[in-house]
Image (cartoon, rainbow, N blue to C red; front, side, top):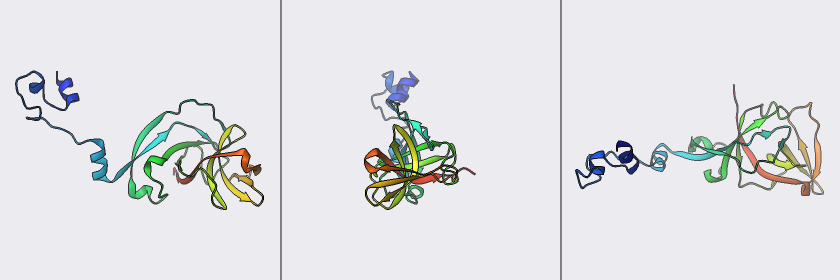
Length: 175
């Protein structure tokens, strides 16, 4: 009975019919949104998509997500993109070392799906693989995909061969 009362946010005495007021003696906890607003937190989904810094297959039909609560002020250091359009993902591989290390978390802005600057770090699909690269647009609609690791050679692709999933405005470095 206590579990039922807890789910209903009332007391066992109300559920058993001993009292008529569901709020009498009941502790009604604040909603998660109220707590988040009080603490100035924003909800950002952590997506379980191991993004290949080298390359990873993009064949997952459903990508699991877990909500993470992060301080709004901290997120605003990386981007002005609204929180519902942000996600956190884990990078895998070493081709972007030292910019992004293996297993580090990256903040991705799902709103930014076009390369609208001369260059930027993007999560993209190229040749059926997801990858994170510094993308530099060249004259004539060609893009240069650059890995931060000097041991990995650059690649060129026509803009039509790329599918930009999002930009990467932040990297959460491990020490």
